[in-house]
Image 1: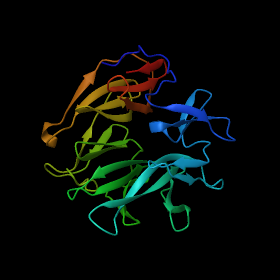
Image 2: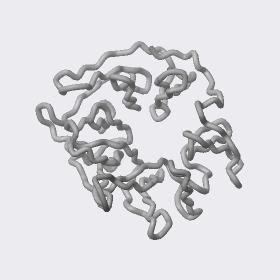
Image 3: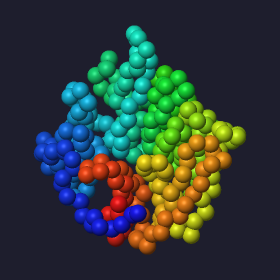
Image 4: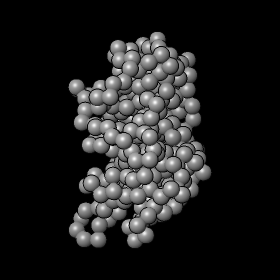
Length: 273
């Protein structure tokens, strides 16, 4: 049940500690909350930072001549030795250009220009290979050995998630496409494979998809549904959730594990969880 008990956010983010970012006048989190900035009460990713702190503590410089990072991601490549994978950090600009860190150059290099705002999601295939997907106005693409692998989806929106080994994305205001099980680039419609669901709603267009526990919460402009999307597609079903709040900001939806796992989102009239 979503409610409006939490109307304001405190600066108590389990394990996050805040400190000044040199030369920016903004706040930066450390610990598990790295690489975000807080300024005038607004939390953003990558804004105003001169470095990106890796999981192992290494610091990668963000050159001043690069565009502002809209979001960060990792791409995975087969390791030179053994069965593992190496990963490289990348970031997306708001204009849809993807930059990936080049260790030989010791800098971020332009990898691909999508021409529109994108979102990245990480999925696994049948061989348990991590696959980074780019979803947005230009369609759905996958990172493949430093190249771009296109899918048959040529138009979408940066509203996507991974749930129960499938990729789900919104390609029209009321339409959700899903991939085949453990095949994140196959969206072809077939029995027990990929397909689509249409979610017409009087609550407006779909603005967010939030996986939480055993379902996906579908966020509309002014409403909510829970999408039970485990198992075979023939067993998928949608259940309406009563909601009487304000307009929902879909990109704000997330999951927090502080004090027990909770889903939350922002609306015009406050924070709901």
